Amino acid sequence: MFPSLDGTWWWLIAAAATVIHCSAMAAWIPVRRFRLVYPAVVIGCGVPVVAVADLALYAFALIGLTIGLFPTRTRLTRWSHEINRGVTRERYDWPPSHLVFCVVCVVGAILAAMALTH
Image (cartoon, rainbow, N blue to C red; front, top):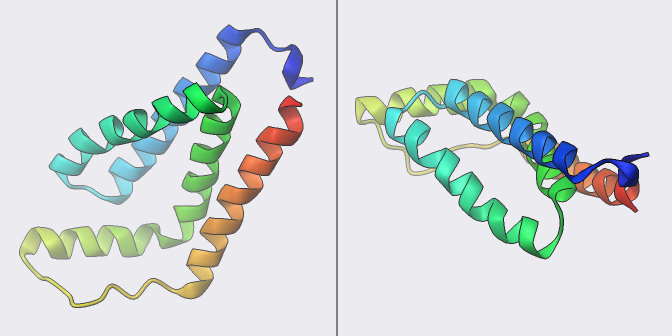
């Protein structure tokens, strides 16, 4: 099904994935500097992925990352507000279950991209 898609559709899917992911991260981490820099970082890191692999891998990995970070969104928001107030912690307690969920979502999305495009 997906291998028969025209290349234009993959570019639209990748662009939509980038917008969705960057919008979600901007909502979860409400720091102006982050909102300005993060999309450039995502696109900058995505260019080698697109060059070496394909657009589907890039798009699916971003959607997997967005889904994987969803349970941690309230912590990310709280931590960013603390950082804005000048509070620094020695350690940010990221629950292991959230980390495992994020890794499973990203790896699962990458595997789905590979399965659907080959």
